[in-house]
Image (cartoon, rainbow, N blue to C red; front, side, top):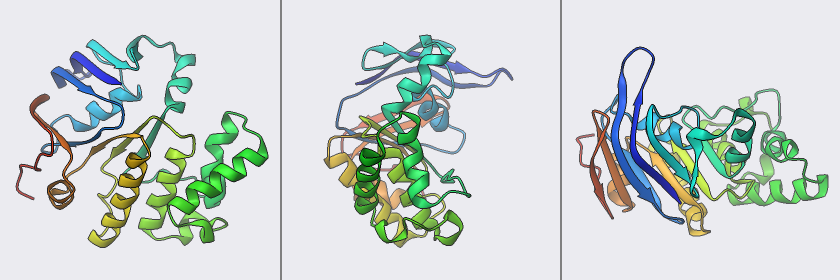
Length: 228
């Protein structure tokens, strides 16, 4: 499903963020990516949806080397990958409904199909009653739920989340994690970079730990492994 083969990423300033990365993630897995700040987690995440390209090695999604994609092919790759950010990245002038439907309008789904899909995912994240609200009228947790709805409305095979609970209080974080678990239970692969020791240690999943740009641990049902 997702594979990295001897991946290295060195930025223009000479900083090597990743080196010698060899991992494989199968369809339907739930994977936490953990490690100290500056370890290379965000680069690891961004390689999968071609936000950055590897300096060396291969990043394969369904056996396609994403580093070799042409610029015009990248949007097609990203239609199959939902991305959730720590800071939500919602469009402030649009309603909840419009923020979520935007992803479907880009691929020119019919209005009837768009409405059905958007309301289905808003129901999943418990926001049907807030469809006409603007992001500024929502709490942080509600905004993150909108971001999740937007990420999954295309029924992606892969969902990538970069510190999705980093700006949320503990109770809200657990609500968000229930949604991620439900999305994963429906067959979507979930890869989540996180600093939350409580979440990783409680909701046991595969843990990939990165330090100094290298994978130092890869465990099924692993622990966070660092002091919080």
